[in-house]
Image (cartoon, rainbow, N blue to C red; front, top):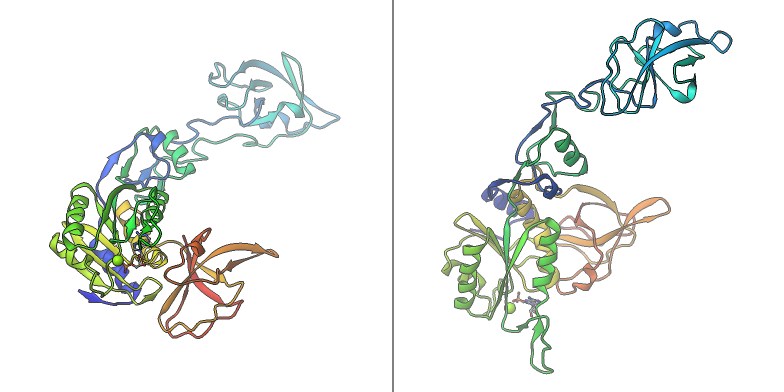
Length: 406
Ligand code: AMP
Ligand code: MG
């Protein structure tokens, strides 16, 4: 078991341990935001035939070579082809076919002119300038060529992917199953959100459950609330076992420091968890224990709300993204410029939470002053984290740091 490794080592250890939780075929209308478990290779050309992008007339460009305002060329209209129908006659010298937007180009024709650029009657169309072969013809396969790799296994089904899957006739893509994640709160001081902790009772509301419900829902995971366990290894163990029976992963909060009542690691071992790592060398979020039970990861986080959340963003979210099937488990890295400074030294790697804001045309990261373990309210509205390397002094406004989007 590792003790207090740097966060990159801790994350790598978890990523190596974790795999996806199977795949399923899902109705395309339910698939937005899910992760593809198949490569998407085009089996059909889109569009499947040469077609007109306008209401207009198709003819042979050669017929209009000498056309001008002074010497217009008049062509005889053979038929009209509405969208969804097909031409029945070939275009020959001196003739044209009227097409509505999306209608197939008739054989013999190599160009289309929008009707607004012509004079026309029901039987004839007059053209005032030379047309070029290929003008205003949408070619077969112009959007998608048969055989092209359109999306990879591990890519998110975004709107473009969903529409492209539909145009290829894939009504039930193969996607990764979403992990079901159990949430277990530990601490004899906790009461449920609807309860009012009595004055002088020493009780507080269980906020961590809701913080993690929100993080997990945003990721797209299903959640199972396992309940509150008091500071008793047996109680924690019982709920952990329930979690491993019902879920693919479990998150616990509380009881991971080194005090007399920090019983979560012991309870994990009672429940059959192999402990992988205790503590990560970051601030906030140092106290934690990670383990695995029958291939299912367990993230034991601090009870301190901001500590738990930071630790989870740094290590837990990438691990869950790998479980979800993402090709790239890490959140996108960005460079951020601080709009205000951070005055403390950072002997450990420090993660700052903040908000991207647009000021005078430049995106900067605004920092709440309070960046500690216990202040969760300063995480409200945060959408980015920045990393101050271990051993840094105070960082002034304008400093550029590496960060990642939440
Ligand atoms: P622990 O990690 O158990 O030492 O708890 C650290 C701090 O976090 C203590 O002040 C706890 O009361 C608080 N805490 C623990 N669990 C929760 C929770 N679920 N919601 C809010 N605060 C909590
Ligand atoms: Mg506790």
